[in-house]
Image (tube, rainbow, N blue to C red; front, side):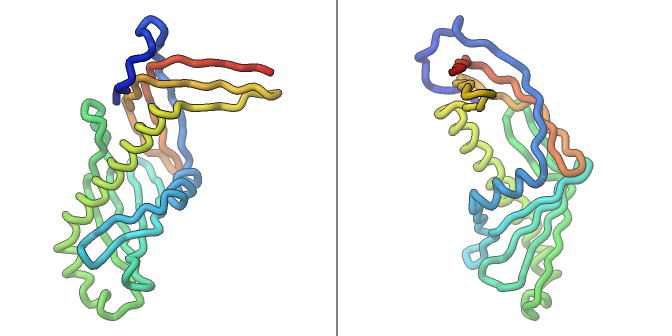
Length: 186
């Protein structure tokens, strides 16, 4: 995703491949802070998201806000499209758990009719959240504390995710970033 700001001369920027790991616990804390609500239908919304990461699979769970004690679990294979910077969910399996007898009775019906809608809505929410985080990164940059009262500040003009690998309890990511950095040691 390219920044629209053109204040930095191209010769003042450099590109770098960065590989990093994002732990399942960190992702779940992040999701809690985001208070992500995904509208499933006009009546029902999914909230309080959490995930569990396995080899090449993600299991996401969310509560149905309007039905106390009801939860949806989505087990899927996430696929990253590097060219379009977009994630898609494949091989989706959906389960519903509920203490509500009406929701239990509608389980097969809901799974059958809502599977495509749920996957589309989840993909859309994930990609919107991703785009928002990249936009924030481009706008605000990244500050990293350095030992003994130092800090490194990076401003990015371009961020391209090249690869995601889903491993047990973590996501490995390869990113190419273009920008410039500033290191201050006090």
